[in-house]
Image 1 (cartoon, helix red, strand yellow):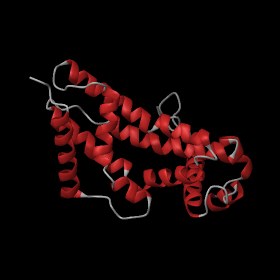
Image 2: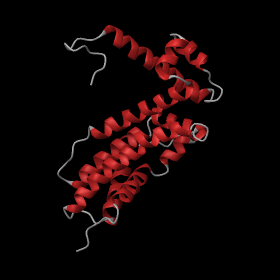
Image 3: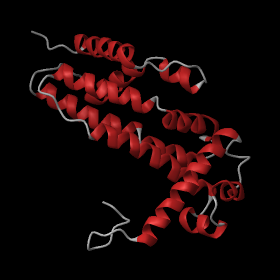
Image 4: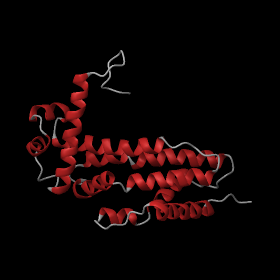
Length: 214
């Protein structure tokens, strides 16, 4: 749903300006949280970097914690939208390779890595932000994938003791240690042919482990 559109389908200039301001606040916060640290960043810093006013920021997010939660939820939604956009292929391996490539690219994107770094540093002090992250990101992805795997198991294409555990195993196979290395500042993200080869190996290992027993 486009919140910046009026009932007659035309863009609402005021709503468009609010969304642009909201986006500017979050982009500035993301940069500042990652460079200065969450605790050292004030809302005045965010306003100075993005423009606008402190009163507008408070009206939109209520607090720094609220801004942090909104930022994390926004980044996680971007990942989920990319996952949901994938169509299902009649061949299970092709479906899982497509999901694996998309998952790898999105979770190891600069935005996603930034969120992980922020939560690693601030999650204990901001448990609500961590809860929002897991609910909107990893847990939602795992639920979607678990349903796909359970459907395949019901047709006899997979042997699964627990689709949720299997979904988690699939995600870790695809991400390998590349994700941890990226979070720690190492350049580990694969691209192109190398990424596809890694994902295909991960999918083949997953399918071999959960092959139906004949």
